[in-house]
Length: 120
Image (cartoon, rainbow, N blue to C red; front, top):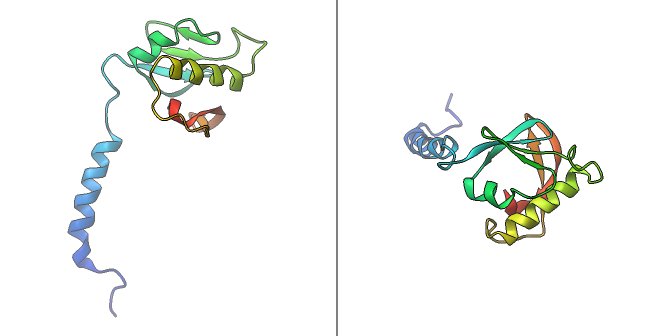
């Protein structure tokens, strides 16, 4: 019985896999801190973005991490806080190519809200 998979492709597939795996295991930029959204780990934030967001309602900066939540600004929904975060990052020069496209914010496998795609 002939295999449906061409075994001669294995070296090329393995080489490409090795290239891609390096990209998925990149460390965050130097000076970055963990980012939480509504108490859930959602990624990393650069030192520059942390500085730009220092006065944004709903953003709390500690020595260990940056936290985005609407508990400090209960009159704002989490999505409104995220909208403000994206806007301030854009105004602060931390965003390239604003798209007017919302992307889900995921934390620990849970959908937490939405934010402008370019702000990620």
